[in-house]
Length: 310
Image 1 (cartoon, rainbow, N blue to C red):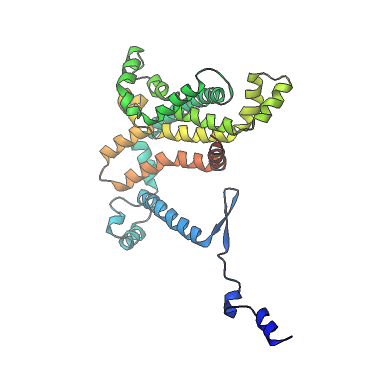
Image 2 (cartoon, helix red, strand yellow):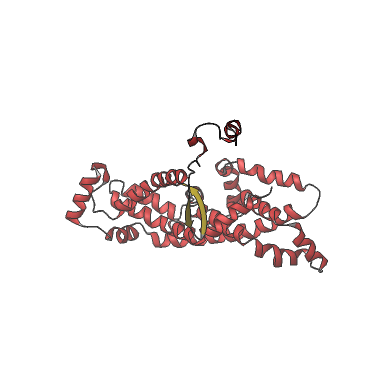
């Protein structure tokens, strides 16, 4: 081979330019049955973000089991030293439970949250299916009205809602805590989006087999809507459990106190006792944390499905 031909075949540039460049290796992340592949930088960012979010929760739990008069404001080192000297005060939970009267409050919040959630699931499923699948005059206008309710805060409607409840003799009753939020525009829109994402071919095949609308809804759409139902259940139940506005405005009877109202009353009485106060906060938070951990996989799937088509 001549020198000129060898020069043409020789690669141009530096030898190191042709070496394979290092590539950021993905990092497998397994959480709640989901397998996610993330770059190392994303894992670091998510870890820092998770630490920022969990830091106040950790401080709350530490305060809740610390003896009275000990808090993190004096520094973590002093906190640990004083706790080692006096020991952990697990009795704070029992004392907060008894003094705050949380037994009745838990029962009221559970009943109210479950009833409101059940009504919302029924009404939102029917309305969402009708707006997603049925063809009738004014469907888009009704959907626009439903979506427009999302921009109106409930606090702006408190005077007309109070007047209606007073007219119906529902003030200071469970009805005043259930009916105002029994139907929700967000819930209807959520179910509408989920039903819209389900392929139309499933309904067409059922219609060809002789199924009517109720059979299609009950035997096909509702079984497929399980992730959306769990998502709706978590959103509604947590929202009702954390609601302070309705029981504060529409009730005055002590036997109708909810968890948030009991917690607000407890805070007024024990403002200076951080250990008891944080124990009461942990008690009121445990049910919704457990509920979310149980349904988090279906919750994520429901959120993903409702965003596929719209």
